[in-house]
View (tube, one colour):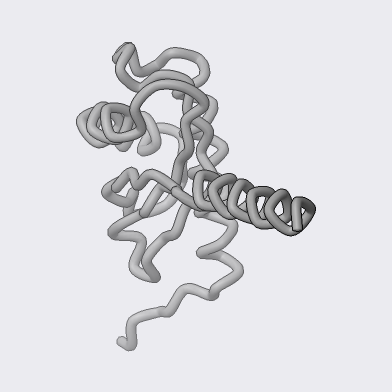
Length: 122
């Protein structure tokens, strides 16, 4: 019997549901690690076989690497909580990754402002 392939739409729906559920669990304090701090989950990338999920996050305060370590430490617990919520055969292993996009955008904006300030002086 050939293996059934997941459609991209289904993968995206499940990834979105994982993001919503994880956000809710972290916000409600179902993970009691204070090192996590105040994080926002930006997106979830799910592999086609549902084995792994990259969870991209940002922080509003604190050291992002400390938050990443704490989230990855709590990943097994969060996966068990997801297993109770999701109705899929395989619940993915979670890998938390700090999303540097926002920080890079701020840096770029500051560089543009500096360049414009230098131009205005000339």
